[in-house]
Image (cartoon, rainbow, N blue to C red; front, side, top):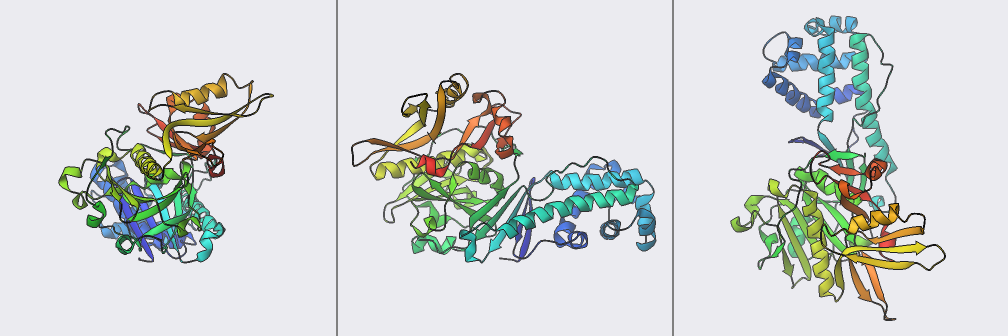
Amino acid sequence: MKKTSFQMLEGKIVLWLRDRVCEDADQLLSSDQFRKFLHRCLGDIQTKNSKLMGVFGGSTITDKDEEKLIATLKFLTNLPAEHVVKLVEGSDVFFKDKSLFNALVEHIYNYWRHFQRLIVSQSDSDNVDLKPNTTFNRTIEHLTTLIRNTYREIQVNITGKYPRIYRQVSAGAEIAAITKLKNLDIPEYYKQKLQDIGIIRQVLLYPPMIFNSKTNKRTGFYEEVKENPFEKLNLNPEKWLCYPAMVGSLLILVYFSTDEFELNFAMCNLFEMATGPDLKRKPDAMMFFGVDSKDIPEELRLKSYFYDDKKNDLLIGIVPDDDSFGYFGYVKKLVLTLHNIRMMKIGKFPFHGACFQLKLANTPPKTVLVMGDTGAGKSETLEAFRSIASKEIEDITIIADDMGSLSISEKGEVMACGTEIGAFVRLDDLQPGYAFGQIDRAVLMNANQVNARVVIPVTTYETIML
């Protein structure tokens, strides 16, 4: 893996780090990553024949113009415009219309922020499983502050005016993750292709995360195939990550392409991340989301499916990279389908429903299981308890929001176990204002469309495993 690599995808940026990020504005504006980003931004301006082309005094933007602009911006982080003109030859063209030049800087900043931004830090330390990496958190915060302050200083030195209102918007990464290579307890057949893919060990989110997915509904079903699809997979370690999910008592390794990173990092609000000790056990299933169509038989390229590797006692799930699967429901449902299959194989009864414990005033707690398919009213029932019967109910403890399993204890008691620490629900199913009351932790999807959804944490892993 390269020390630093930079991927610009459609509406997304992925920055892979080994070393520290830029420490000051000069390093930031001198970086290869900024040059690559600026070249794309200016190319977009030129393609649209934007009025911002007037900053360059011509109908085209040359490589020389880009270098001159970078040099000018670097000096503007410390010096006012009247001094910069004297230091950068030919930069006077930028300052002929300061308002237009200022608008260009604003456009570059907003162009950066319109991307969904992911930073992946590759760690060699064993401590990442033992305690939070506060240095990493501070590094990401530093990058956010550096980008924001660089933008502000440049604008002040162009206009000569200081802003009176400061908006502390997220200017760095929306999502940052620490990954580590792990020697997983998986058969050698699988290990050869997976050993160089980083396992996510820590995630830093800047909610609310708001995005539109390529589709806003899930269709079809997951079918079983007779041949192991893993054999044909070609996974580039520089484009794939693994989120190790604890789905109830099961360990399911979710491998995903960074092309769809925003969908998959929403799992942080839905499934508990496996701990270091969890990763020492053999996984129950592995899922691959965003598999290149050339690695999939033609008849399966528009299907999501699974394979039961009986020899290795391992379930394998596949979701193609086709746009029709660009919806979080495909992530969630295949993970839960693998969970249900595994539970049946070990003699437990999976259920599709909501399980919760009600504590009424002056009575012992009662466990309630509401079963039903999508649209049956499970979430509405929970919301009704929250709103209508709030005075009579002392407490509601959610054990399973959408899926779980039942087993019989040694005492002959029916025991319920959940799968998710969060909920993936329609905004319409929540009482008015509830989702926005939780917006500081939420992932909002397709908020302006039919079937708008939100992923919010609702309980703890310890609770669903009671």
